[in-house]
Image 1: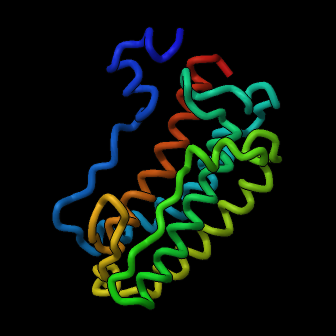
Image 2 (image 1 turned 30 degrees about the vertical axis):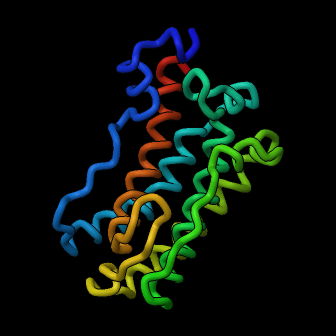
Length: 184
């Protein structure tokens, strides 16, 4: 079954098995602390989600027309590394404009299709650990520093954190849902 044959609800569930990111309107330090814990937990959850998968399974798309498990694994450290760097930029510049990336184009670069997932699993762990260490030094006012996101406008660093705390869980859930559907 391809994407066109699926109804919109089925496709939405495959794309967003935990739902779309939803952040509180008024972010509290308690939210931030929980999101930092999510950031730290994500590499272990990802490693567990792909544990024991063979090359054919890693090269299986998590949904029709979607990325392969391997591409998702490579995407996570790249995406979160950009966010970590955006945090550093946001803390050292006044209301900077962040550069956006074309993640679909990145996913089509050859290393995403053939690269060893272990390298990206280790990189993801290191990036998340380093980013978390930075965030644990920040106070609430620093999390409220604005950054300009192309197409999304100004938002505080805390919003980026909330989105990327969700982002890790989102992609892990895509892999877990695929494994469940396929009986892996």
